[in-house]
Length: 454
Image 1: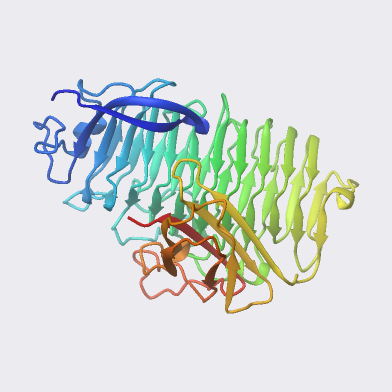
Image 2 (image 1 turned 30 degrees about the vertical axis):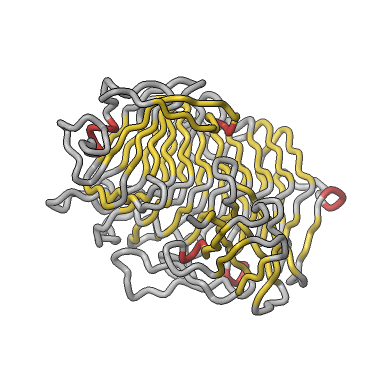
C-alpha cells in the first residue's frame, strides 16, 4: 500500500507532546491477512498487530467498528519520538472479544515497545465466572483483559471489562502508562473469595504511570500493585484515579481495597497523588500503602480518600494535603507515632456540601473525568467545565457506570455551569451474573465522563 501522508498532533508516552507524521492503515472485523491496510482492503486484527512491513514509527492503525473475536498478541515496535498507534476509528465502536469461535477464552496480549492502544473496548463474552478451586488462577486458562509485558506502552482511554484482570501490567516491560481507562466487572468468584483486579501491576525498571482511570465493581481490588518477595513493586506513579466499590461484583458485602501498593519485597519511588475513592457504606479500605516488606520512600499528596487507610513500614514517607474520610479512625501508620493531622484533613464523620474534581484528558481535547461527592444528596449538581470545553463546543456527558447508555446530558457549551442529575446510576451486571444488581453510589457519589459530540 502506498504510504499516504497523515499528520496529527500526538501525545507521546508519558503525555509529552510531540508532532507525529506517519501513514494511516485500516483494520476491520472482515479484514484479511492478504489485505494491504487500505480502506478497500483492510487487514484483520491479528495481521495488523503482528507489525506488517508497511507499518513504521509514527503510523496509525484505525480499528473500524464491529467485534473482533479471538485471542490476540500485539508485537508493534515504534520509537520514543514516534510511537505506533492502534486506535478506534472516529465515531465507531470497536470491540475486542477475547473469545474464539469455538469458545476458547484468552487474553489481549501486548508485547513490543513504544506503541499506543487507544479508545477501543476489550471484553470477554464467556459466561463462566466461577472457579471450583481456591486461589488466584482464573476458572479457565484466562478470560479476557489486557496483559502487557511490552516496554513503554501507553494504554489510553480503553474500556476494559469482564476479563480475569482488567490489566496485567508487568515488570517484564519497562515503564509505560495506563491512562484514562474505564475498567469494571473484571474477575471471578471462588469458594474463598472474589479474585481479579482492575489493574494488577509489578515494575522493576523506570516508572509505570496509572493515571486518570475509573475503576469500579471488580470481583476484588481496584489498583493492585503487589507481588511476592520475588517480585518488584518499584516506580509507580498513581494519580487522578477514581476507584470505587471494587469487590462488589463478588457481592455488595465483599468490598475490597481501592488502591494497594506494596508486597513481599521492598518498594521505592512510589507517588500516590490526587486520587479519589468511595465505597457504599464507606466500608472498603481506601489506601493500603505497604504490605509485608520494609519499604524505602513514598509520597502521598492531594488525595480524597473515603474509607480507612493504612501506611506500613516506610523509611521515608511524605503525607500531606490529603483528606481522609472514615466513620472510625481514618488512617493508621506503622510504625505508630506519626502525626498526620497538621498536614492533612482527617474527618471521622460524614461530610456535608459538594466536592467536585475535574480531570481534563491529556490525550483528547474536550474530554474529562468528573468525580462528584454530593454529600448533601441533592438530586442534581452544577459543574463548571470552562477548563474542558470551549464556547460553542458540542458535548455529551456519560455516567461512568453506564458509559454506553443514554447520555445524562448533552448540548452546546455556553460557558455556564452544566447541571448533572445525581441519580442511582449502577454498573452493568457482570457477564455470567445477569441477575446480580450492583450497589448504587448515587446520589451521594458519581463519576461522569465528558466527551466531544460528533
